[in-house]
Amino acid sequence: MDETELQNKRRENEETATRNRARILGLPYLDTREFEESIPLIHGLLEKEEMYRNFILPLQKGGGENHFQFMITSQTPRTLLSSMRADYEREGERVDFFLISGSAFRIFMTRYDPPKEIVYDDIKIAGDGDSETLASVSRTLNSVSSDKVFDFLLDQADKLGASDIHIENLRNEIRIRMRVDGLLHPVAELSKDRYRVIMGELSSRANVSTAASTPQSGHLQTEIHRGKATHLLNVRVETIPTLYGQDAVLRLFNFDESLLKLDLLGLSEPEKLEIQEIVRHPRGLVLMVGPTGSGKSTTLYSMLNALNTTDRKIITLEDPIEYGLTGISQIPISTRKGGSFAEGLRSVLRLDPDVVMVGEIRDVDTAKTAIQASITGHLVLSSFHADSSAAAFSRMIDLIGTNPIFANSIRLVIAQRLVRKLTNAKEPYDPDESVKTYIRDTLKGVDGFSPDEIKLYRPVPTPENPFGFAGRAILMEQLVVSEEISEYLKGDVASANAHSIEAVARKNGMLTLEQKGLLLALDGVTTLDEVSRVI
Image (cartoon, rainbow, N blue to C red; front, top):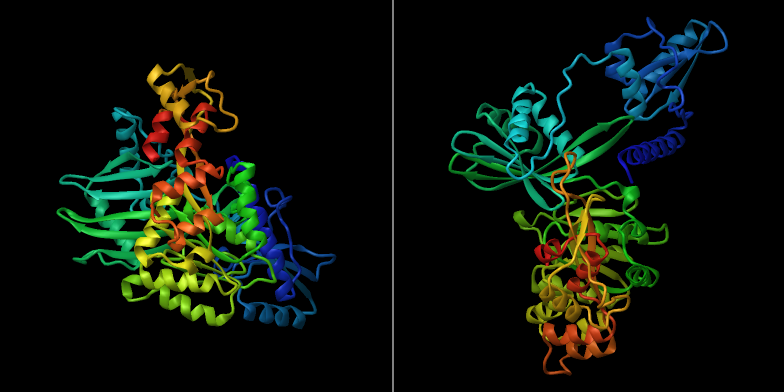
């Protein structure tokens, strides 16, 4: 989905939400998209300051001289509407109000009050050794006015699709790096006076102290305006004192609820069918494993969205809540302040949920509580730290011991990674014989693999893209728990280790992360080096 399509989708979602809001408030809804750039503006009826303050705009005069129409938003004070109706009625005039979206209001106000601001150049990611781009971006960021620099940085990171912004204090400057498609890239080096500006914004908006001598966590939200659409950017802030000042990492969560769908994850048909089987019969325990930044949250949220129907009660326990989902009860658990996933889980089970998502299983108490919940008719989703799906079993056994209840509750373990995707400028090449032998050995017996046709691809940098990669693809290893694997978990088989469990799963048809990665490399989606990097 390109940027224009994404903007249109976000605007459509906002208009749908406004339409529903109008129904609740008992107001007529107005979709302004067809005329918001062309309808003549009415001047002299309201002052600009009044429009800004009360989120109200004159629409037009109605069928006669004594009929007035105004556009309002959900932020317009209801008391204002009552007083305006009374004032107009006293004069023998009629007034109507129409509810419009926040994006529509901003577009109209931009016409009433055109911005008089400087347009700065977009940030570009520098390739290896590209000091010229680095210097250019540094000049741009150093020239942005103090009251705009923080918002400009967030806006540009969102535009680049960055998942993190790293703000690092060096001896003589501030280094800005952004993580794009899983890799950190230098963006700019700022003068030291920018430090006070950026940390001042973080202090006031994320509730962190610039003078703290211990690590801190904070959170902020900001609206990103892109064309005719607006979306909410959630930012998790982590700061830590260093030799030259506070370093900060800003984690950007730009989930679009309408895009959190299993069909949009790029899964193969067998992978999708296995997850849909869980969704159709919601019970038991499902674990997601993988490192930070491997897309676990997106997959879990997509599963929750698929489960999110009016006949189900869904509750999540998260540390912190990364994105708000409509129709789901989400509970923040602050483990740093003494909160506990296990305690929270025991509490929410009294609320009779059908589905529970636990942010992470970290200890014995949480593991046992989640397992107990999953065998009493609930579906429990959670993440867990392990390198692979088979390793998750051996780690869980180390945590709670061989446990027949665990063997009966666990249904599916998904291990996930994200690999960078090659652009269309990629070029094919023939690997050497040792690489071919490795690929043949690893993919031996895999359906669709031809050992005689082995061709790999490498990235081709272009002026528009100095890396030759754009976007990421999912590598997903799905281990469905069979009777044979259950025997290992119950302790009926002596050698219950990751290697033996994986061997059984492969015999049952599971493809490992390594095999999935090699198949993507052979299809020209990614490179062999990229698969090695993430696995």
